[in-house]
Length: 395
Image (cartoon, rainbow, N blue to C red; front, side, top):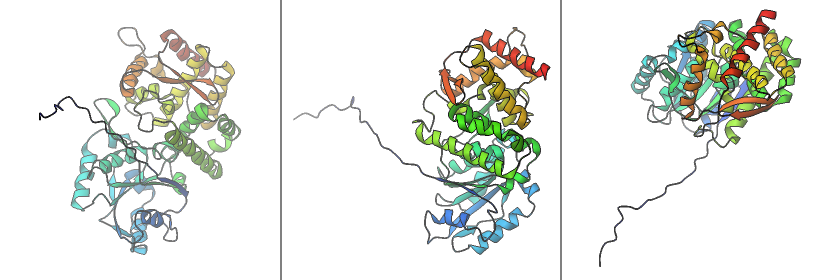
């Protein structure tokens, strides 16, 4: 009896893995009387003493000089469940920590020295850039050490810190290296917002405008009604804005059907194709949120120029940014290269590559309603830039 030839056989593998993590909103996170961090760690095994390494953004460490001591005291007070291994690791804050492999490699080395395993925790405390970088280091140590994020900026608490992505910049491209790896939990402490620079408080609110414009018209109207209070950083309004923005981002991740972005649609990247390019062109002198505000204004203007959106809605969007103290125009939008083409247009090709080959950009059909387009009319884009510059000159 002969043996059946199976060299051409195909075995189809298919399985699903459920992901679940909590995003908590609190204050005084590291007060020994606040059980949140302890209870979060206990979720995996309430009988175990969990090893934990803390990573702190240098900007946060400067603003909170007693933070490392607070963390140590907290770990001692809850020593039945938490074992802090070594002193907290201070890393540079801001986009600079993502522009090189240096700090990722440094963290991996320290994690190895301190004996972290896949059941250990990395407690990452900082802005979005530090969370991205430390998350990448944790995700690629033992193919995934548990990550606890403690976002400390508006942008991180309402957007960057609550999602499933991490990474660093490389080869002149933002987030060229990275992974999709959900955190174990996200712990938002509103107290950290109090010590931010004014510029950073403002910048993070751009993401709230973004998600309101593409997902929630009622939230946009709330932003309009509370723009003055947000512009003055009133605590209650800031806390609600952060929470509602985070909820909308989380809902999209859970219900979009594409949490790990295998497809080409990126509605949460509304305004980002130009924003990413502006960040690079300014060598990151523009904060991410500042660039996003300009990118949103540009794509809102484009939506008007292509007949998708009412011109009055463009003015409403720009007026909200005015209240928040965020610019809606930048001189680099008008920069021309030696071939006579707007330099910003290169951002479309880079965004296409980032998406995976097919350009899909979100524009606005109405307040609260995003619509995907697969090509950009360059003449309409030029008119959009002119619309922004005209509004700036009239201000």
